[in-house]
Every structure is written in structure tokens, then in C-alpha cells.
View 1 (cartoon, rainbow, N blue to C red):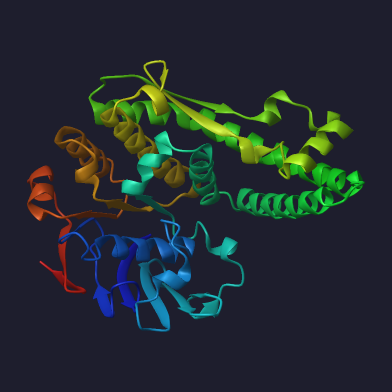
View 2 (cartoon, helix red, strand yellow; view 1 turned 120 degrees about the horizontal axis):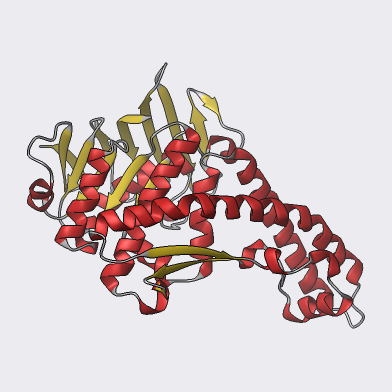
Length: 366
């Protein structure tokens, strides 16, 4: 699917703007703070109904205004029109072709998207939660059942957490409710674990291949998946273990504690990889994400690359761009402070390249 028109009203630093991107490569340039990232995040909003950077909806409303609205027209048969509206103090509303979308989960994956920005460096060096979220977001865009199971799991996890805190306050804790939640979560743990494990197994080679393409085959990268579900039997949970959970006020078993370990030349990337190697691992992960979504979902995702040339050295950035263009991975948006830097990286015979300058809260095609 290709974004043909984007309209913003009162979104972040924008008043009212219209962007008519091309189907290929779209370069968005302008000085720092001009709103390049906001523009890319608005495109992400229309696909996932939330910010890619964890920004709460109320902070996305332009200062002094009461609402924001994002409209997107996508090429399909017929044209797909998506509108996301949010008013301070109210719930956001998502509409598709004039009809309200009752559940956000039903929309996820309809317009697949992959975004990469400076914050993503934490994906390699940060907490396991970030890597779990990356895997979950990827699978959810082509497997609606997985997303629904994940939502059910986290709903039970939250309910069990509240029960653990409640029982913590009792001098004689009642373990029955805690145990009930535990057993309700067992089949969900199993289903999510199996989907993640299958995904990691299938994506390992693409990650390795893309790492080699971006780095010039300088190093070898490997991926492994650790989970309690593989090593522990949840049916064997004892009374003492439930008591430990109450004391800790945390669920101590489940897929919410999983991690994905990334290795470069046999060493943990989080601890031992150089900054350049970590950036290359990130690029390989994002390219794998694009590859898996298009293979499993049947449609090219929209690719959003925020300040990629500031995060990769010249050679690796050019290799990344070359891969996207040569493999025709999908409509791509790249933001940068210098349009000349990107122009230099684009092959001279490359067609379907559009340039947009962000200045004073306006978008101007160049």
C-alpha cells in the first residue's frame, strides 16, 4: 500500500499542512526542530493508531489547540481513506472509509509500517522489553490472532498484578485467585512463545544476510531467544512460588520476561559491540522487519527512516539505501537535515524520488 496524501491539523508543531508523497523514495529535509520527525510519526499514527515514540495522545495536540486530526489516502482498489481524530479529554477515534473502527487491533496490519529513528538504538543496548515489543509489533502486523492473544495476556497480567498487590495487604493471603490467574495464562504463554520462537528461527538468516549487506560482510551476527516457557513447567508452580509473587508484587513467570539476544562475532552486542556495529545490527533488524512483513502479510510496508544518515557512517548508510532501492522494499520516507547528503547517496539513475522541505511549520515540495 502507498500513501498518496497526508493531511495534518493541529498535530504537534503543525497547524494545517498537506503532503502529496510519491510512490517511491521521499526525502524530507529541514533544520533540527522543524518537524521532520513529527511528520513521519503522523504516518505511523495512521497505521498503528499511536506514536512510534511512546508520546501520549494529549501531548500530540498543538499548543493552544484542543484537538488534532490526521487524514491519509492510500492507493488500493478502491482508495483507502483513514482518519484519526483526538480531542483533549476524550478517546481517539479511528475511521476507515467513513466507518468507525471499533477495535484498534482490527486495524493493525491493514497498512503495515516500519519506522527507524534515533531512539531505536536502545533496541540493541537497552532493556529486554524493547526487543520484545519489536518482535510483537512485527508479528502483530501480519498475524491478527497473535495480536489478540497478546492483548488477552497483558490484560490478565495486569489483573493478576492488581490481585498480587491486594493479597500483599492481607495478613493471611488467599492464594486461590492468584493461582487462577496463573492457570488462565498458561495456554496464552504457550501460544505466544511458540509464535515468537518460530519467528526468531525464520528471521535469523535474513538478519544475518542484511547485516552482511550493510556492513560489507565485516562481521557475523546471530540471534537467540530466551524464555522461561522453554525451561520451566508452569503446571509445577508451588505454593511457595505464589507466595514469592505476592511478596514481590510481580508475576515472576511468563513471556513478559523473555529476551532476544543479539550477538556479533560470538559476543553479546549489548555489551561488546562497537557503536557502528550496534547501528548495523539495528539496520539489519529493521530490514528483516520489512522483509518478514511483506512476505507474511503480502504487502510492502511503508518505511520511515528518521535521521538515518546521522546514525550510520557514510558507507553503511549508502548500503542501507541501496538495499531498499534495489529490492524495491516499498514506499520510503527519509528525513535529514541536509538534502545534499541524501542526494549524493542516491544512484544517479534512480527514478521516483521526491523532495520536501520542512520550514516554519509548512511542507514545500522541491
